[in-house]
Image 1: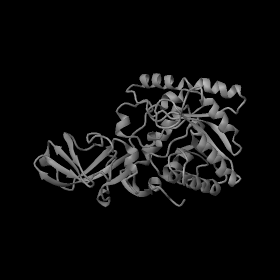
Image 2: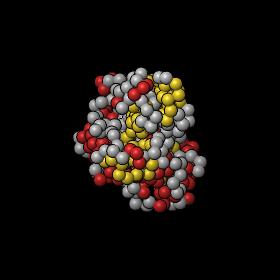
Image 3: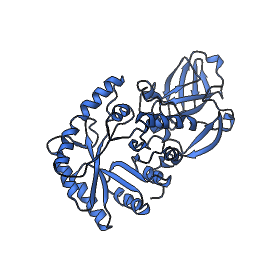
Image 4: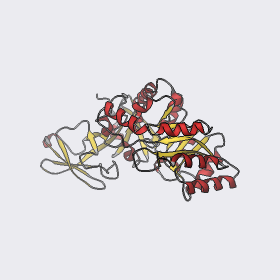
Length: 369
């Protein structure tokens, strides 16, 4: 029997998300090995799995810091027992009040957010001052992705120092996400990463010369995890490495992680010769990529996806006569993070059997706060 097959699959309605804890554990250990066993240097992102059970697995392995992207993910991580969590987002609007509620609910945890704007920094300072609390923040640095953050230039240090001077804000360090680094070889990714990180060093020298506290540095998404791990004292924040996916596995192999989450689907129709339809529609698999980059079926060959709707994925297949309505297909999502977010729960597979169910609690925008 293949590692992914489920003996009691007849009890699993489809489409469904399957997770394999033994493989997740392998991936956790591979992440720890990448940082030379220094678990304190890991700050894994929870956005990929969104499950408290996976956070608990990492806590048991000695990982103590986590990163998240939403208030719900933050609450999930704290509920699971995390005591150091960064929400890698600049808080605006109602998010500030929600964040403050969690800070007050978990007074023994270090809970931080990002800043890249002076006006927002002043607003955060005022909001925390009204509660007699101190905001823990990291300055978000744009080192090439051009999505968020301040650019590294002659004005960066001035902003860093100004925010550091706010009475109710404590700057813990720099957040330098490099999700744009996706070169196809580890050598090219390392070169790209080193080049984009190099402008950080003058900023660190300015911070030191000013007598400000030494900043922590968070760097390294999943493709750039290995290059970031080579920088001493950098906290690495991969996320996809916990579950892995088809997309990254095509060019990132140096960390040694395995597919640990699959989507299971069934053939629901054979509408025309050479064509089958499965129940893996837009609502079940991340569909932001072209149709040929959404799922890779492990137990089907010679097929091509030709259409997808909300509840259907249509394939052309070579061996049409050998496929029957009701056949089960196991697939690796091309992009696992948005695929997990489409499922309320994950079926837990141990020794080729569905044994329990984990809640994907942080897929929602709100848990309780």
